[in-house]
Image 1 (cartoon, rainbow, N blue to C red):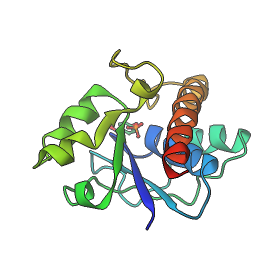
Image 2 (tube, rainbow, N blue to C red):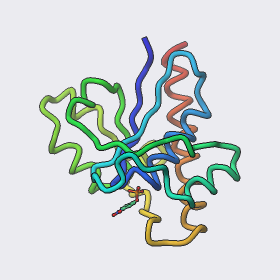
Image 3 (cartoon, rainbow, N blue to C red):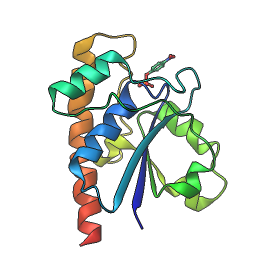
Image 4 (spheres, rainbow, N blue to C red):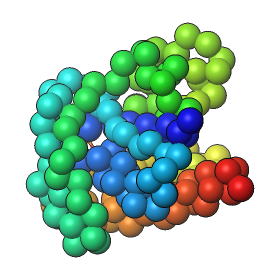
Length: 155
Ligand code: 4NP
């Protein structure tokens, strides 16, 4: 059975598609399934933001096939780990949790790099390409740490 990891942001077109693409690139295909979703519904069915696609492509990752999904409470059962990009996502997702096990699956993704500091991955939607590149670097570091941890657990 695969370990299933979900990346969550607000729109599911800027940050979480990048996180999905980056973590996927760091894990073997067999044994892991990485996906992403948004707490908002505006971009359901849409491809990622062109600026996220561009920043990923420059780093050798293709995220253009991804399509926006809305976070559903059933995802708590489906996924083993749920990484959220900021404190608003954290609160929105946690509100839908029914059990302590559900709650414990949810983590702020930058806690992987800066434990306990409650740092947000800033939303680049209203920003410029540079902001997307900065988000890529933050997520790359966090996903490196997540991948190492997951691979160690499996060995
Ligand atoms: P994301 O960025 O949460 O990183 O995908 C956003 C994209 C779109 C919107 C908000 C945030 N929006 O309001 O449409």
